[in-house]
Length: 266
Image (tube, rainbow, N blue to C red):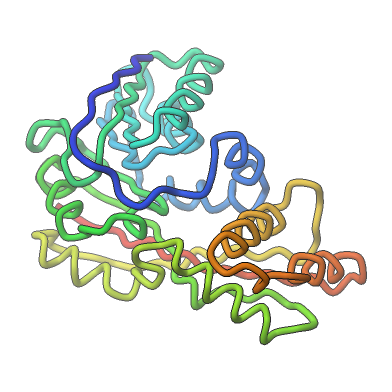
């Protein structure tokens, strides 16, 4: 495993997550299933060279490293050094020596032309101001015939059952300002084709939780959303998280969020 600190340009809007938080919520069953579906769509094969763009804490990076085997290579790229350190720890724990971790930006990739067989970006482009620039870079580094899978969320798809739906709608609307593009999936195929990709297909990746445990994805997100909204609109989220939790106690909990995987061919 190699860990490089190459930096290539400014980052996009910062994410309100840390690596420990991601380790908790990204190891929940619905998120593991979503990663499995993403890997299936990417179809990485032994010997492939794969770029995990915006690799975060390294969950998908290390799973892909196992799939491509010792003859393959996975490059995990992120703009946060703390995320890369967490990814490095995961790679070392699994004794993976076919990972390279790079500190860099999506719009200025420190890679040559046509060097990757596969590229994946999960919940990355929704944070990038220059999506067209990032797609152009993705197109440049992919080999002809290579495949890219871009997964982003449309936050209009979020359903959270609460006793005060008006407040919930206001909280979620305020949360959307955390993203540069909170409704990107509807435009992503067209943007990708304008960047030179020859074909695109879209798959829905729903995430549903009707029961809660200590580390469910949705309760972890509720804590993050509450903190963000309180910083930007004090008082708006007062009582909202308690409303969410009360549904779990009464057995009426329901959360649903749909992400969309856009599968592209170079």
